[in-house]
Length: 75
Image (cartoon, rainbow, N blue to C red; front, top):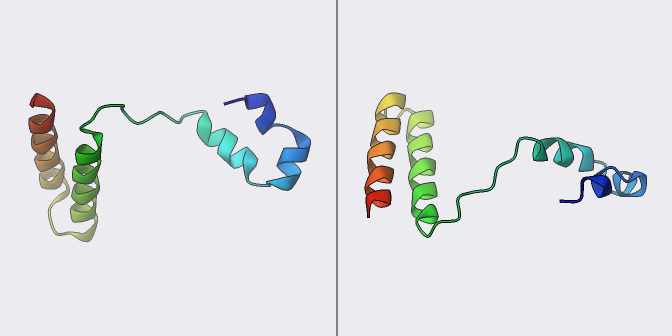
């Protein structure tokens, strides 16, 4: 990402949320580039949803996610 372009006055005028995007880039991290990522992401999303909705206790949802993700990564 060209950070100078994110601070360009014309660009900021045309896209007022550009500074917010630029700030988010400071702590952003790329998703892992592994074939298993789609499955892992689905497990994380489902576990977070279960924890948020109260379908499972937070620790239970996280522990089950860790077990499932480790199984995927182990092959």
